[in-house]
Amino acid sequence: MKKLIPLLPIFVLAVGSAGAAPPIALTSQLATYDLSLLKVRGHAVTGATGRLQFDVTDTCHAYAVTQRLTLLIRKEDGALVRTVSDYDTWESHDGRHFSFLLRNTQDGKTKVESQGTAELDHDGGMVTYSEPKRHFVKLPAHTLFPMAQTVMLLQAAESGRKFMTTPLFDGTSTNGAEDSFIAVLGLNGMKHSTFPALSGLPSVLVDISFFPRVREDNKPDFRSQMRYYTDGVARAVRLDFGNFVMRGRLTHLTIPPSTCQKG
Image 1 (cartoon, helix red, strand yellow):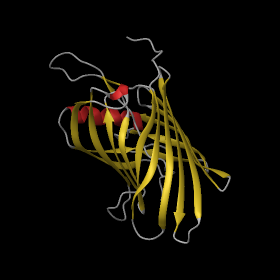
Image 2 (spheres, one colour):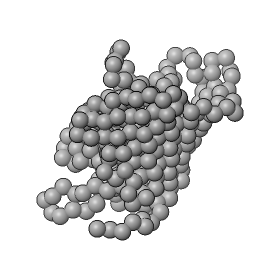
Image 3 (tube, one colour):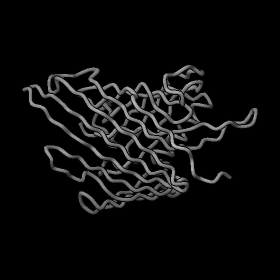
Image 4 (spheres, one colour):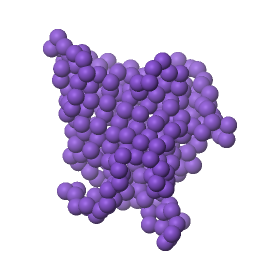
């Protein structure tokens, strides 16, 4: 179980002029998901429950993202393991600058798994890791950070594309960028929702798989599936950790008003 923090990028699709592709902006949100076990593979895990808290703040020049994933896992021998993963990122609006910090807490002990900064240019870019040890990793051309990848995904889905691949750097690996494969599974029109902010909004169902760039097999390190609404909220979340899969149910949602100047 390599990647404990799922990616939940957000988007909001603004209204554009007739015949033109609508511009894409990003919005703040605070969402909480209750996690339940959907499927197990093998016998290493016999039960699991958890919670995912997802907080995005638009600082007007960058996006500050905080994710907290709490998992309580029952192993084959009946032992319970509680893991808390805290994942904080900062991504500039232009998609060129990125900071990241990933910490895991188990049995009351916190360990920094990954920390550093990354910069992109036309040839790729560079990651400067400060934890767990200082080192540098070159990023390949066309690498995207998480929010920039979301913009690309929405633009591609709007134009009718069903499949996309791109190198992605999110800071959860100490080996630099991973390959991502995105499949658009379906588009939904406006529907009523128990959450007022989602009523009357269209949505898109996507499946995203993450692979190491040097592959030993065709199995992804991590896979997620979710339905995104055009106000940036995800529902119908599925998180595939390899030996078990969890379903995420949206239970709390707050969308704060924007304080950024328009134009």
